[in-house]
Amino acid sequence: MKIGIDLGGTKTEGILIRSDGEELKRERIKTEKNYDGTIQGIITIVKNFENSFGRVDSIGIGMPGAISAESALIKNANSIWLNGKPLKKNLEKELDRKVNLENDANCFALSESVDGAGKDHNTVFGVIIGTGTGGGIVINNKVLKGRNNIAGEWGHVTLPNRSEDEKKYVKDCYCGKNGCMETYVSGPGFASTFNLRFNKNLDSHQILDGFKNNDRECIFSLQQYVDHLARGLSLVCNILDPDAIVLGGGMSNIDFIYNNIENVLKKYVFTDTLHTKVLKNIHGDSSGVRGAAWLS
Image 1 (cartoon, helix red, strand yellow):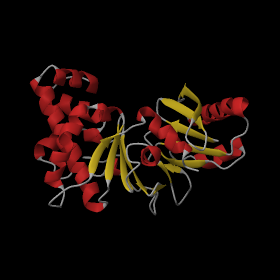
Image 2 (image 1 turned 180 degrees about the vertical axis):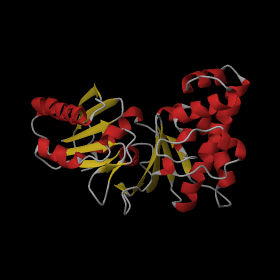
Image 3 (image 1 turned 30 degrees about the vertical axis):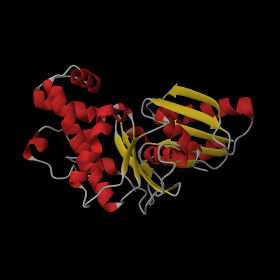
């Protein structure tokens, strides 16, 4: 048996699966927005599973950010109370066993590569476009971490070929830089660019409702969103040349993306023909937690 835990900014979800992927139990709790509370939430989920099924030695956890190769502390997490903390060390001490800790986008990519939308492909780039933006690279069902544990951190590259107009209608990223993909293609980023341009105060759901009702401003913004997404993904295609790109997170549920993205992407990739597929995830919100379970 395997335990997977998806540590999110608002919820922490756990899953217990058999080695063949069959789900045995699932639990979801609110994430406490402090370090000690986060650890206790994870411990509670593990104990609840083990009270029903016995001890499980394989535990994987997907989290925002990464482990610093230099200090073994958490870095780059948008759940900022984790940054600078020895999360892996503390969890292994509390649970008295090895814990596999991995970036949540990597877990998503692994899940979709093993038995999801990317299962028939060798090289898969998994993209999170939700509250935040991230990416993970999986080759032959193995996560590529990179020398600095930041492989796939696509959310913090700059949107290519930004116009002066695009520089004007965007907020600085939480990381301190300006122009990050996250500020354009995450759900909050999409809403922010819309509101700055049109002097409105709508969230992404309201903008999408407007799109469905043929609102001119909302149509323009969603078309621009697809173009931003395509420009960012063109970098991935030019460097990694993946077989498939699988999208996850709340923004990945927009059908308009899949109806248009590949034709737009072709304009920006350095090739005469583009065979890379842009796919919607299969496991939905469960991708991250399932990928965490597959870490070991």
